[in-house]
Length: 95
View 1 (cartoon, rainbow, N blue to C red):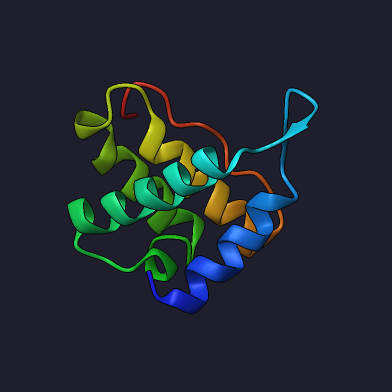
View 2 (cartoon, helix red, strand yellow):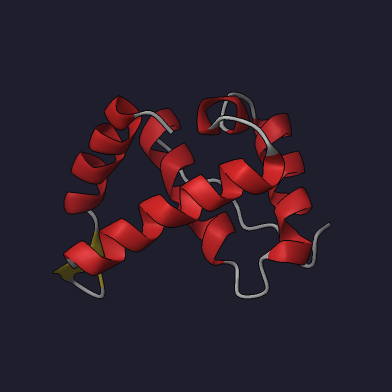
């Protein structure tokens, strides 16, 4: 994730509401860190992950064994939402 991508994602997350409240700085930083972790685990840039629905789905499936609570997958799904303008459905149980 480049600095420009991080800045864009941070600006997007600052507008996101969770339970009716804006995300805290800690929550924003955690999501950015989770995207970076996903990139490192997959060995691919976040833009390549969210480029198509197929690569997104395959990436989420590949993340599943390493992501017990789904935090990385949720951060990647949020980046996808920022980039594509729609929510990507959750992938359950790696299928």
